[in-house]
Amino acid sequence: IFSENSWRILWTIEPQNSLSIITYLLFSFNLLLGQMTDLIYTEKELVQSLKEYIKAEEYKLEAVKSWANRLEGLTRASTSDPEGYLAHPVNAYKLMKRLNTEWSELESLVLQDPSDGFISNMTAHRQYFPDEEDEKGAAKALMRLQDTYKLDSETFARGRLPGMHRDAFLTVDDCYDMGKTAYVESDYYHSVLWMQQALKQMDEGEEHVVSKAEVLDYLSYSVYQMGDLPRAIELTRRLVAIDPSHQRAGGNLRYFEKLLSKQLNELSQEVQEPATEEPIRLGTYQRPRDYLPERESYEALCRGEGIQMTDARRSRLFCRYQDGHRNPRLLLQPIMEEDEWDSPHIVRYLNALSDEEIERIKELAKPRLARATVRDPKTGVLTTAHYRVSKSAWLEGEEDPVIERVNQRIEDITGLTTQTAELLQIANYGVGGQYEPHFDFSRKDEPDAFKTLGTGNRVATFLNYMSDVEAGGATVFPDFGAAIYPRKGTAVFWYNLFRSGEGDYRTRHAACPVLVGSKWVSNKWIHERGQEFRRPCGLTEVD
Image 1 (cartoon, rainbow, N blue to C red):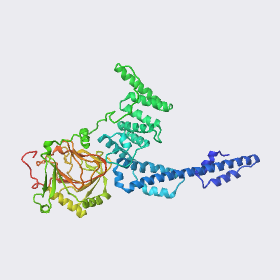
Image 2: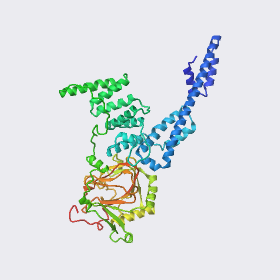
Image 3: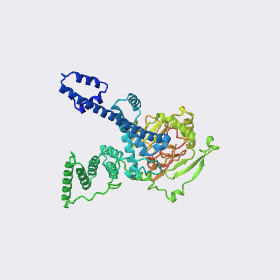
Image 4: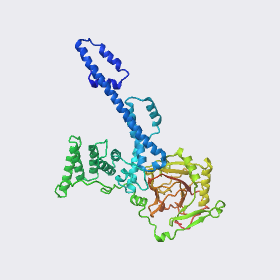
């Protein structure tokens, strides 16, 4: 006779075939009275199993209803103002996580009793869902913002970002997933910060799926990797106390203690008990240095710190009406020009784009937006790079009268020909979107950067701001300490090369990560060819 669990398996896995199986079992035996009696009790067990099956189905249905109610509330909030909702980086991260992870969990739940309608919908839409790399990218974006703007994990977990009044929280499990993402990338600095936040919210009584042992396991080892042996020992002891049978904890604890003892002996110090644990905060550990030499000054400028705008420099900045050297198209309606910086000279043009033009440009660009690329200095080929995180598209003047008009306006304002310029590039920087410090022009060790274009180096940059940004997203110049903030409809312009054709290395600049909001820009890179009489050479190398 099958046990109760065996019958449950039959009914759960193959409900349509269960009756035939039961019939076979009943009539394939040489039935004696004793056996019949047993079958009576077997039937009773089957009824009980059937009830449990029904109960399981009802439980599953209630679980699906709970999912639906929660997701309906989320979609109601998000669809009422999609851009406003996604302006909060926590909402953007959780959308990535929800579609990549949580909807898959719901799919698994429904698949316990296949639902053709749901699965077909999932199959049809899955191609548009973010994948694991997208979720990881969104997590890294939060960490990037955390670093650049010196925000602790608590600030993100509680949704306390500047200018935001929406509720967007990270749960214990969200924080754990953030920490695990960093851990897998061997980024133990961020793993510590997020695992510590998960532990903190756990200790405060917040509900969670992940166990405290799992959090302590990752946290203790990450702390060890940060070189803090006393704290690693203390956290591992907590882990052993919670889970004495943990497969790694005991071995790790002995190793950590032995290593600490060895270090102290080498320093002729006595082994002491680790101090009482204090929460790990932003600043407890120093962030490891990376490939970018001006990382600190760049990020400080993004936070509005270290800007070298003195009273003396401000007194040299003016505003004026610019008619493009008596350009017929600007005589009756000259454009307003403001000095943003004196040397190198950076100017901002007001009302460079109308709202209607901006919307049309975005409308044309949106279907083509793809991960932004940079030109490989050795090969001249466009490729993606980790230091540029945005979506971009390129638009030709012949595609739409608005693009042609914008190109002509840039030529009128600057006095430079756009016939040899690159196409108008439209870029959208979402959550954590950035472009780390870079030069727009090619250096002497990059002779082939623009060889295929045949138009020489990038002599100047014309950058249109097509949106306001609630927080972050400044254009900064670390070399001389300038920060230029986005203002919708305005444009900034600077020369990348001196008149001699030599590069102006002071123009190394960056697009700071967007903290809150979405940043839209369009830029025109103007090249040397065709400018011979429009911007003739000077008398010295740095004119």
